[in-house]
Length: 335
Length: 299
Image (cartoon, rainbow over all chains, first blue to last red; front, side, top):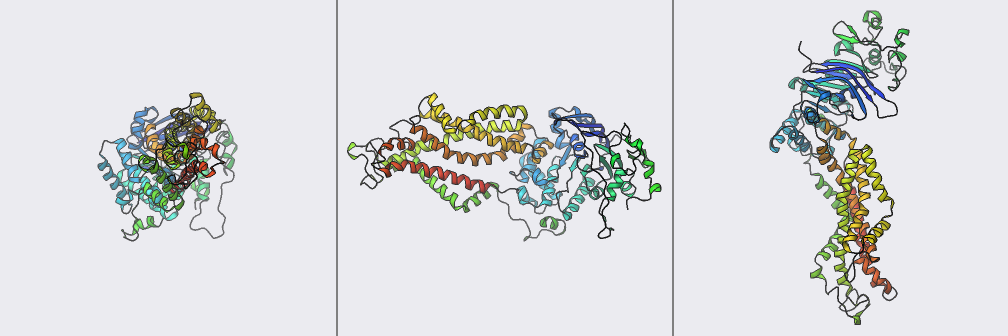
C-alpha cells in the first residue's frame, strides 16, 4: 500500500493563552488515503475542530503549542515557511465552514471572492478566473450561475450560500477538503442535498475529505471511515459501516444509543450518557471517559490513558475492556 | 431555503429565478433615496456647498468692503437683503463667501483624520496584543481631553492661523476615528471570513487590504460624516476665539464673534452666521444617520 495522503502522528495541541494550559488535542494519529472521506465526530470541545485546523496550521500560533507531525501530500506541514504555507492553503487543502453567511465576506460579490482566490494562486486573467468561477457554480449546481456570481452573500438562501462556499473552497483545485460541520447551520432538507453534493464531488474530483460533525447521520452519509473523538483523543476508528453496526468503544455505544432513530416509540425517552465531558485543563488520570462509562473498572481509572487496541477488520478502539463490548458479549448495542 | 430546494429538482423557472442582483452601493443609494430626511439634509448641503463654490459669481457684493454709513442695517434693507454687519459689509455676500472657509475647516480635518485614524486603528486592531495596547492607550491620552479644550490648546500653542487650526482639528479627530476603526477591526479579526481568507492562503497584507478595509471603511465613513458637524462647530469656535481665520476674511464662526457686540442692536443679523453653522452641522448629522441605516443591510 502506498503512503497515505494525510498522515498525522501524535498530534498534540495545547492552548496556552488562558490562566491554565488547555490540552485540546492529546495525541491524535490519523491516516487518510487519497480520495477517502473520513469523519471526525464527537461532542463540543472534543478536539475535532482543533485537529482539523492544525492540518492547515490555522490555530493561533502564539497562543498554542503544537506537537507531533502532520504530512499532507508530501508536505511537512509543521515545517512549511510562510510563503509555502500560503501556497499550501487553498491550493492543496481548502476548508468549508459551518456558517457560510459568516465565512463569506459580506461586502464582495461571490464572483469577486472566487476570482480573487483563484488569482491569488494562479497567474490567470480576470476573465479566465471568472470563467472558472462560473464553471464552479455550475458544478455545485447553483441555478442561474451567471447572475448568482454577482450576488452578495446576504442575497442568497442558506443552502445556496453553502454551495457557494463549497465552490469557493474548490476554486484552486485542492486535493483535500476540510469541512467543519458544513451542514449544522442548514435546515434538514438542505442538509442532505449538501451532503450528497459533497459525496459526489469527492467521487468525481478524487478529493480527500475530512468531515467534522457531531451528527452521526451526516457522518455516515459522507464518510468512508469514522473516527470518534473524546476529550482530545480518538477513542474509536472504524469504517462507517462497522462503526454503525457494532460500535466497540463504550462512548461510541452511548453516542449511538442517544440518537433519535426512526423506530422509536412515541414518548419513549432518549438514552443519554450520564455526566458531562471532562475539563481539558484538568483531565482525570486513566481513561478520560471512565467517570461516565458503564463498563469502567478500577483499572480504567489508573494512571495511564489506555492505548489504542487494534481489532479485527482494521479498526481500533482506545479501551481496556474492549473485549466486553464485542457484539457476542452484549448483543447488538446500536439498535 | 426555497430556491435551494428547487435547485436539485426543478430546472430554471423564469418566475422563481432570483431577481437581478444590484450592487451594494447601488442598493445603499436606493434606500438612501427613500429616506426623506436624509435627502433633504443632502439637498441643503448641496445648496450651501454650491453657494460657497460659486461665491464669486453669486455673491451680490464684495464681502470685504462696506461703508460705515450703512453699518448694522436690518434684514430687508434695500440692496442688502440680509442687512449689513458692524463695518457696513453686505451680510448675504459674507455668508456666501464665509461658507468657503467654514466648509473647508469642517471637512478637511475630518478627511485627514479619516485616513490617519483609520490607518492607526486598523493597524492596532489587526495586530492585537501588546501592539494594540500600546497604540490605543496612546490614542486614549489624546481622547481623554475634551475636544474643544484640545483644539484650543493646540491652536494656541501652534499660533493663530488657518493652517494651524486645520492641523489641531485633525489631531482632535484622529483618536475617535482610530477608536472606531480599532473596535470594528478587532471584531472582524476573529470573524469566520477572515479565517476563511487565511485558510485560502491570503497573506496578512491581502487580508487587511481586501477584507478588513472593505468592511471597516463603511462604518468609519458614516462616523466621520457625523464628525464634520463637530469639526465645523470647533472651527467656528477657534475663529471665535481668534485662533482660526483672521479678519477681515469672512468665516461663520468669526462673523458670529464680531457681531456678538451688535446683538442688542440687530439680533437677527447677528444670529445669521450661527444659523448657517446650525443648518450645515445638523444636515451633516442627519445625512450620516440616513447613511448609517441605509448601509445596515447585511446579516
